[in-house]
Length: 458
Image (cartoon, rainbow, N blue to C red; front, side):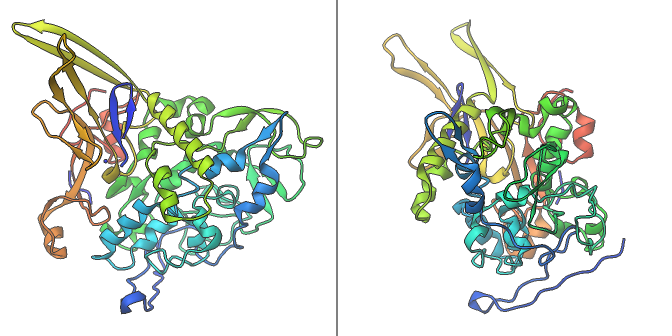
């Protein structure tokens, strides 16, 4: 398909592993390298909004613990990959991998991993080395609570210099210009430290689509970037599309991304207990995904992190993964052999696994033992010390394999075929990940998220 990898889940193994204005920024980088043209995309542009409030300011009101009641909004967020998106060492490794061949394109990745840093204009150092202070808080409080529906902006937004946003995705942010108004789910929130604006967009799956449908803008022209939605070209990640084309997107509030990744709980939104009501629909700000690995390695790279919050986040991820699928296995005799029929059912609202294709795969690990508990058969053996999945004739792996066609490979002086050069890849060789409930082939084709070298019935 030309277009442009451990946690156990019930016996399944996941590894995380128009017109346009082209803005061109040229400047010297470390090592004397010159920056490539900025990948201009519609939406709020760097320098158009007030700078972000530091997340520690939000902590003052949105974190409180005593014996009677607790507010864990800030702490839960701190333990999430959203809060650590701009510290993630794997993110920086990916920047290095493709920046060797395409100088400057790292700023495109920073749009999602540090949106407020990008909006502050600190992404022109494409390695991310200019990010500082609250930029490193990744997808932080002030970003989410100042974000406006990019397809339906209101009067609080500064003029969109490159025209209207053509679709959700590719981090085409549209932002509230002021830093004094925070958007959220409540119209009746008490004004204490800042103004509050009720906005249903914060509870919509479309909000998540801004950064969870990613396509490679290098494969279209600057003019096409202004009117083509990301779902129409060069897919890199399609989590939002996978959800949008599932039955969950038709279930209202019960089927949104937030209904799984920010589950409602009973409590208070801030510490002013005499002024704010007890609510039964406070969104947990844990933003739990599928990454158990980075929480363990982050303290090796950064001092003064809340390791307790990170480990609490890791435990939530493990639980999340455990509930991501069901597995049934039935063993039966066939002549002198014993065969095992395995059925995996995807219980998530997107493909299983989903997200960053170079870092996620899932496989069946099957071990047979005799009456003495000695292993007589094994498929899917994994060496945790070398991160090597042993290949065997019966191994079943669910994954996306992206890569380079011959023309693109020749252009970069690389071999054609599967590659881990995420932002260089221009083809998909394999995508046999398990679709979500409600999958239809035609709908997934329409958003370039169909199976490749695999077949699933509607």
